[in-house]
Image 1 (cartoon, rainbow, N blue to C red):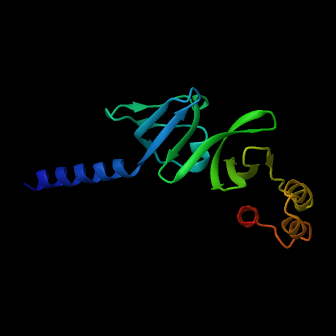
Image 2 (cartoon, rainbow, N blue to C red; image 1 turned 135 degrees about the vertical axis):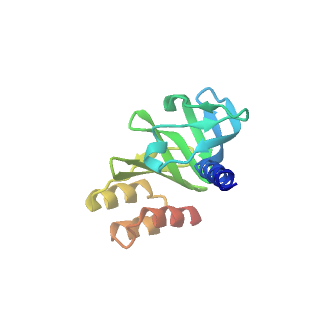
Length: 168
């Protein structure tokens, strides 16, 4: 009796672990095919830009080439391809706004942010403070108040800058 109970408890435990590592999501391929109602493996953000594992409605596991994926959602997280510096790169969407979108690419422990004007240009956010204020204030010059605050180093947090710009 104890062995049956132990097997049952181990079975329930393994199912709960398996259920926790896959999250509901949707995948859009580069050919604009939509694969809906799938369970996508929940891995860290850096690995999510390189690999994708999902279970389809039939319970079959798939590992498509990440280069064949245009974007995918995993729970509330969205990963998509953007065009930057002449190449398409996979990034995590941090903010989707009316005027600006903010993206993050993590690799080898470093974080790189990208800011995109909606339906327009996308830039890589410089990491050095001198270039940061020069590049971002020029990029966001349509809002002189925000550009001035960036120049004076009053605004230095990219999340705050994007949110303020979207509200203006």
